[in-house]
Image (cartoon, rainbow, N blue to C red; front, side, top):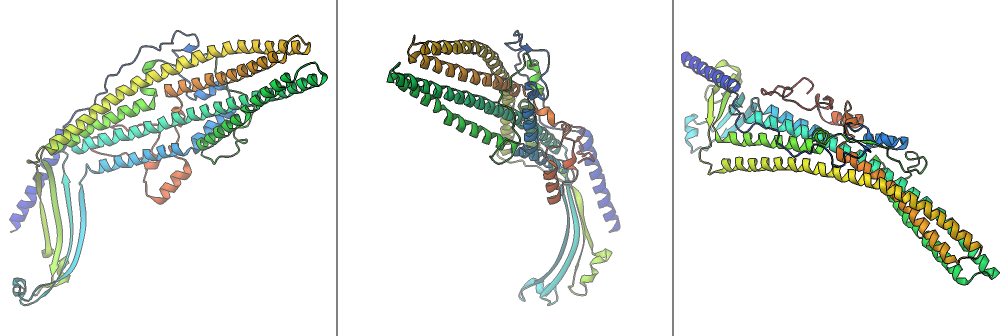
Length: 533
């Protein structure tokens, strides 16, 4: 009997060693290895010849500083620390890290269980069991054991799953960066809109005062008999028309401030402490650094995310394809069992003779699955093709967004220059009309027309100046700028990290350096995890 046991253990050990060696040395990984897909990238921007663009220079990492507005700098810094949408994206990075940990854990023995059992059973007095137990109907039994099962990664199923999870983690980092790009651009655009509305409101209120003076002048001339009541009514009409602009602008200003509060992670309210300063529309620099189209492939986070998602989906093909082949496993179970039947006792469980074991290799092969596995592989392959096309489309759209933003920015600057000249003419026209009205050469209609034209030109210029700056924000958003400010910093604030660590054991996950992507060296083919994890 001892020789038989020795043979069983010896054969099991040889099989285990053989299968493990084959699994780790053969390095078979079914499914395609991901290759970065080709994409259409222009050699240069369509507007690259414009002297206002510095094509060879890369955009500033903190691009909003080109506006030279300390208030804007402070708002973006606060939004980076407090914005809740960005925090959600940061937490999702740790969710993806935990998913990678699950994938790595699947590479090692999948089942490791310790079991214990204490049970009592009673047989029927008419059963064969009662006769075998010498008339005893009640049997007590206790059992202690341990079992382990390890499906070897002979076909690369678990290694492909690690590849997929690692790429998904990198995609989540890119998604965080993309949220940061959107946040910085949204804060800057909202701030510019607020300053633009404040300027428009200031223009409207100034014109209201001018309209009130014109109305008093018209009433005085009518009282003196030097003009008709028509002049009075025209002055009043012009005044009320201008006054009607004020409520709408105040509503727009309040809504803009509410939107900025949300971006800052605070309740809607007074922004005097965080957005104080003169109501000056931030002006763009004379020249703007825009880099080259090829840089979009690495700078824009949404492009990187699409690439990582395609890589993750490519690995899932291998995971599905591995099910077409036999699953090779090692199985072992060892324990002690005792009963109180006959002369035995429950306390005999720790006797060496009470031991039992099962050991040996196993194989499982889903031969007749009626095409389910094959079609599952096809599903994953089709999704991979979708991911490739999505990546290529993302690259294409990114270039369109930059081109659209550049042309809008450049043309808005030209429009602002024309409007500035038009405004100078409108101011001169009003001065002439008012002087001629006082001298009695022209009626009040000329003053009204000139006043309305001046208000229109002032408002148009303010709107265009705001649009010019907002278009530059859109340029930097399209270029994918701004996410670099998180390098060297944590994905979530210290208080959120502390709360998560207090609630759940995160090990070293929360301390993983956020500036680095997860590489294959950090989760190698054997599934080893760095100590930082």
